[in-house]
Length: 372
Image 1 (cartoon, rainbow, N blue to C red):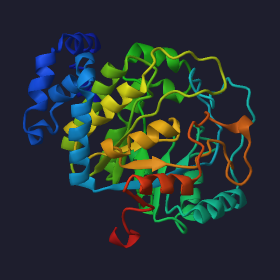
Image 2 (tube, rainbow, N blue to C red; image 1 turned 60 degrees about the vertical axis):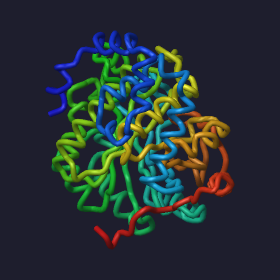
Image 3 (cartoon, rainbow, N blue to C red; image 1 turned 135 degrees about the horizontal axis):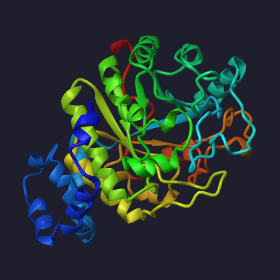
């Protein structure tokens, strides 16, 4: 299990090593054969170090070359559908937190079908089903039923829900789920406890072992990420890369993706532990592409339109567009039900036009269901 591997690495030691990296270390690495950097965690650490930031232009050029070699000039489009904002966890940074006095809603079959009709009209063929963490309301039975409804209309169905048991993931895979996204939020154990004081999510180890359960269940794709702003983004991202490296070696038949969510305005009064600039985010994206060349990198509509447009050539392979973060938000928008505010509010077609203007192709799906 990854928890065993992680316990051999100390957070403070990684922080010290990041600060000790020298300019010549970065220079030597960027001059090396990039094929030798794949899966190299020391190289990843070097590329996300503070001293590497002034060399971002060179990193971006190399990242662009690798991305085109591996993925071509394509951007895969997906969209989240929020099924429920019910949640039994207390998470100090989340709009769905149990302590936030917001209206709660879980979609019925008719409401799910109404959302589907709108998303299909947009052109989507890939969907991400999202819920809060409330086992009694949106447990496995509800999720299986929702997947049965949705898979009739979309070629690719992914989920971002509460951590589940291996046998439950096996049921969801059998029903048609292609990918599961599960973010550790932060790998800093003490901060994790502060951010998650109550609820099942307070169990750090159970969440940390979730990708292992997914790997054992044979899930086609596993999505990882940290919530940027909860702790030092460099150290947190190193541990996320360590986790990814472990999973790739242990469950080598599975595909992987990494997302880059930054904290956005939401209900509550949470103040981020640290702020990450857009330049730093691009540095992180390039580091992942250079050291993990086959991993899908995803950027959501949390980010500014100008930033999302600018980073298209530099490593990102999938994007959401036209996203709503409230249950029923496409057919019946309700700001009071939102998890967080999106920054890029452009429609899917506007995003397609932007992608094409960069001489890239917008792809609505990346595989046919008949292949599985």
